[in-house]
Image (cartoon, rainbow, N blue to C red; front, side):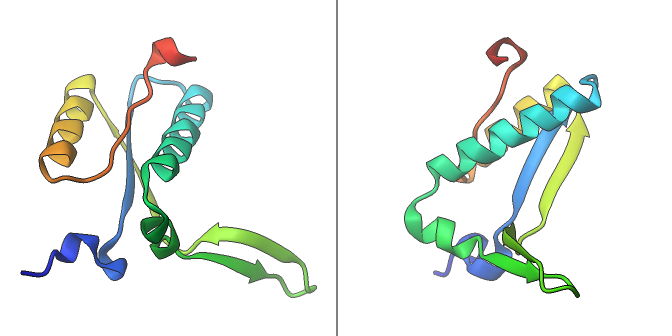
Length: 102
């Protein structure tokens, strides 16, 4: 049986952030989650994330930009807990960042 959830074309990066958090702390949370997730992934999964160098019209280079969408959702604490449970049940790598970690 093929596990299509782990195929390169189907890889998704998703963060669920508490909707009660202000934009600045929410961005900090997303960055911590992204760094933690990269740390959890095996090297072959990191390669499948596909980072690209983008070039502007003036020849400037913007290195290591993710070719994958980073989906950021807002939800309640219950939504976040449910997303973590479902990711764990599906065997997907996941992490969490709590307010007390700042």
